[in-house]
Image 1 (cartoon, one colour):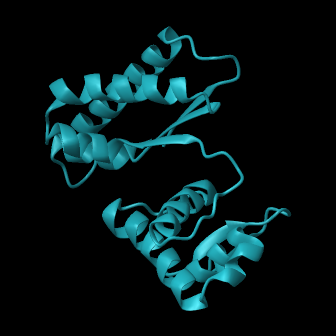
Image 2: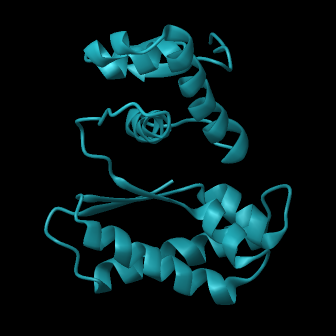
Length: 180
């Protein structure tokens, strides 16, 4: 298996074969004709900042095109570039960030916060409710460096909680939940 360079993104093209792009190339591909309005170095820096955020700050190994485009849109708007990605972004919540906000091992605050976030995503009505960072969230809350039986127990508890609350919230027809 070929190992990817850490500063490149895999981008699935229509024939489902992975194509590798630098962050700037991926950004230019997403922006299309709008990319010509920006100096290439600005676009490269903005895209690299987005990649850095996901890799270092959120400790994510993979991101979807939608997540990358949404974050890039935010960065470019702060730089004064008015660009909107045309595809609707699914609502996404990073469980690790919720756990950080709740405090290490503080399940008392985490679960009500998780329930509010689930309700907020369902109310957004985008058809997909998405939670990412489950493994990192669990390890943070348990205070473990490696996966333990306590981690598995909390993992199952969070997934069960989300499933039960999703079902009881009566989401619109066709609305799905994804927990990663």
